[in-house]
Length: 108
Image 1 (cartoon, rainbow, N blue to C red):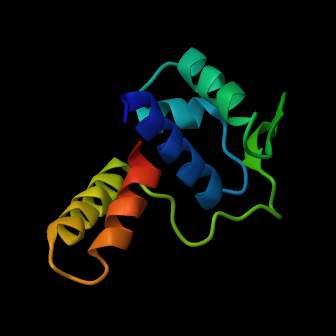
Image 2: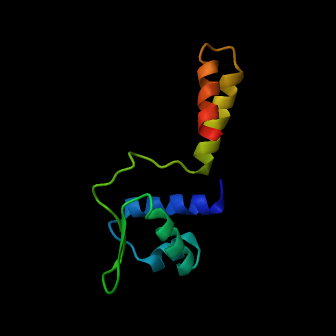
């Protein structure tokens, strides 16, 4: 995974935490320029119901009806899942074949 992926996951998490947040606040929290935030938002709008509002009181928000469930996986979570599946796939456990199939589906 890339820095861009991690940054966009962090941006989505911010949108889940705040009802509405400014691009400037996102920029400060992520430590990137405003143009990078705008590009990330434009990319994410293809997949998620993210709305932007201009002017005083404006900002960025995720549609309140949208939910990811409880968590979004970050890179460390993904790598831990991959490592766990690799260990299980190499074991003598009856589920090792299923773990190997799942590992292939997710990471190939």
